[in-house]
Length: 227
Image 1 (cartoon, rainbow, N blue to C red):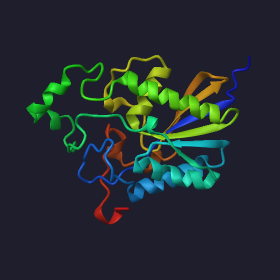
Image 2: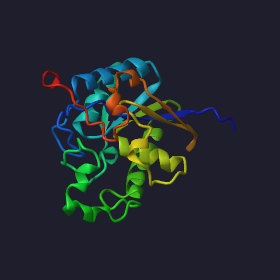
Image 3: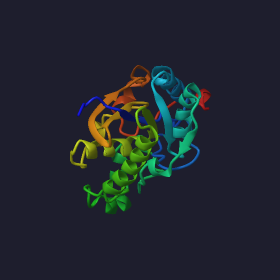
Image 4: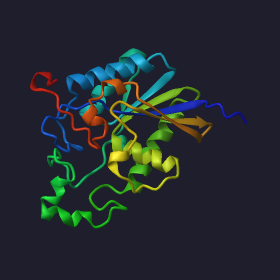
């Protein structure tokens, strides 16, 4: 059988969020794309809008929906909102992470959540993330058989999915995730079997240097850039 993919499902991370305080926003409402994030979203539409994309499945959170809109307009697609591709749950949601891990170390009351990095104990279990993401991927593949689909999601769910597909262990350093803002992690299918994973950064040149290595890519758009 030919190994030429007949269907591709792209996992697209959302663009930069307006978040000058460095909050770990998680599933919270009210966090929208910054002006730069909107530029990133348009870059995606300009970069892949001429591809054979026939299906668009999106997390319900504002930043994902806003990232999807230019591509939906470019392709004339309906946005299918899917709770299964939402951001992962996290006990530290709402905290200011401007100081990174020091944020937790300075708060002894939070240490009780650190007992098991394998699950992890501070958030949604990796296997639960994998199960919901892969179910959404399969539905997207089925909806786009012979063509391409895009799922707009978030860094940890996308990275967790990639580790699963590549049969790598889930325990990892968040600083080493290859999943920058508005990046594409593409799953290539032959039939219902994934034969290749590719990665690209259509908006890579727009990402602030500090965000390239920041696991949460908190953003920091100035006040006048509030959407």
